[in-house]
Amino acid sequence: MSKTVKRKGKVRPMLVRAVMTPNPVTVTEETTVHEAMEAMQKGNFGRLLVTRGDRLVGIVTELDLMRISPSAATTLSIWEQNALLAKMRVKDVMTTDPVTIGPDATVEEAALLMRDLHISGLPVVENDKVIGIVTERDLFDAFVDLMHAPKPGARITLRVVNEIGVLAKMTRVVSDLGINILAIAAFDDEEDEDNVHSFVVLKVDTKDTERLIEALEAVGFSVVHQGFGGSQVK
Image 1 (spheres, one colour):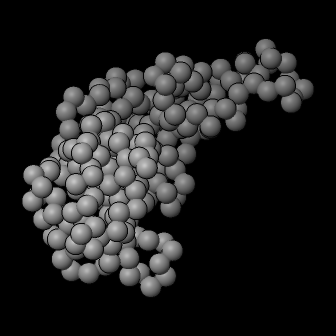
Image 2 (tube, one colour; image 1 turned 30 degrees about the vertical axis):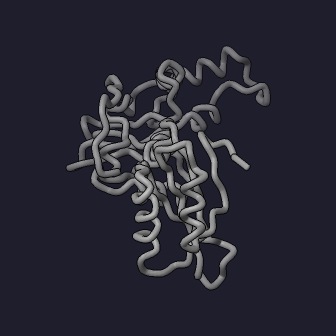
């Protein structure tokens, strides 16, 4: 088995290479199911990549192993079940030819692929060699980083009209007040069937939001929510 080495820094822009766990723990097709279980428990993994040399040949998940674990719903004794389990290899339970992604794909592409296929992890392959794995947790961390969630500041949500110049107008108001914008995100207003409006979230480096909200509303913006550290402020 190879040893997992966690990344020490982050790479921009937000590509899979930036958020993946490099050098993931791997097993071979001949690794016993018991050894695979131990590796998952020791590393707190939900899945293991199965390789033949550097080439990916499969993936085995915690659910795969749970399905073959000793059960009371059988006429076999625990000793017989464990004896059968000891003979089983990863190749007997793994998913072959798993879906993969390249390191230079965007984080959004990885998220869409995982959502559409209902999977929680993607092996990262470059030049036919496994170089990492990206999981739901990695994408959660990427979102937190993108919105500067751990940093102090205010989170302001505005409902805006979808038209050219909206962001420029908004950022000019913030800039004129000498406030730094830490992050911006935009989301569709799903209740607006005509797609006339969207929501824009600003993470700003200030706790004094009163004058900022007044300035935004003075030029026609509608502030629908404000908060600090995820808590709503009335």
